[in-house]
Length: 481
Image 1 (spheres, helix red, strand yellow):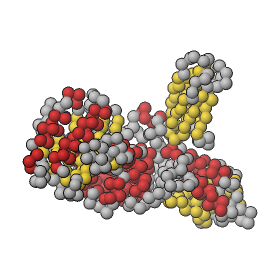
Image 2 (tube, rainbow, N blue to C red):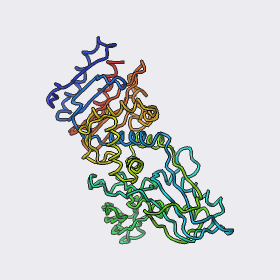
Image 3 (cartoon, rainbow, N blue to C red):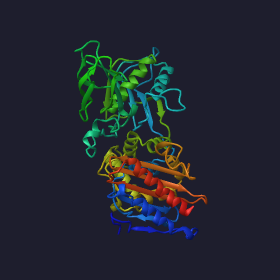
Image 4 (cartoon, rainbow, N blue to C red):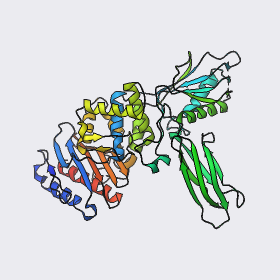
């Protein structure tokens, strides 16, 4: 049994190729975990050969701890297994009929969505235009100049989820805690700029980027004379695109910014498409509306495809993108159970784990990205997951989604010395008093080590814990390589 007062629970099994240095590793790891700043820290650690399953290092690996963004490993693994590395979201543009000789479509233009979160304000690498501009240009090229009805965003088959009940209240007003629906745009956030007015006593000037974001603002921020302290307080109403701001902005001070989480993603997306159509010379006479019960209209005008899942999952894991993780969770739920939501996605993850022999007692998840502190996972379960993924037809594609030590992603500045550069592929997990690192170590002989290090309840700095995690990886690597 592992005691928090000593490393009595380390089980070390070294492969037969390195018996001479076996005794060095327990002392090295023991001394790392016994450091005074780490007293009281909870650990769950496991290193094992990904192919044979042979244990290399075990420190209380069945202990359930908060994984933070290591949760994304479960979401992306499930997506690879049930959707496939080459899966692409399709967004279908339909109408009752094709345009007449004047370029007019009588009635609505319908955008039938199937969960694509990849519509953005900015260009993706390697693309010459945004997805919404691509749609607008294609429709303009078909001679379309006017839509007499509404622009209808059809998200049937998906449930809007906002203000996830298991997330902390303080997170719900932040851009990293996204709402989820049958489509997403610009990570479902809007940049709100608050700048001083022209004269003392004037209301502050509030600007949205993009300007068409569907936000209602109660602006209680006043302009103060030069030399005053500028301060802003704000609140967001869960599930409603309402922002209340108060405070002072001193004349001459730089603007302040809020990363506002849009609560109505389908409306936001529809406004973005309508704006793109307008810029490209196509007038939509009606409004943007959202439907959850329609089928595509008979005339298909264009089908837009997202990048493949492998590319999306790389953003999830390398950049630890909460927004995309939650959308992938919803999509696997829709794929497996016919309705996209957080709840159905979690059912899919549980099914995936059960089919791979991962015990339900070894993990419990409440979201797809790891924001919830109610998520609990053991190192044993994570290593079992990683070991399974290393045996599938998607093994290389999945591993490529993980950050590479000293090269990219969230470990671009970690594990780059002592022969470790590029040798570790891993996901990090971070929140207050929580840190995790899990992934693979590649050995010179071609073997692959799956590992997970979960650290909770530490009182020292996060960087101290991360350095300790990295040193544990180095100790194991030196012993078995």
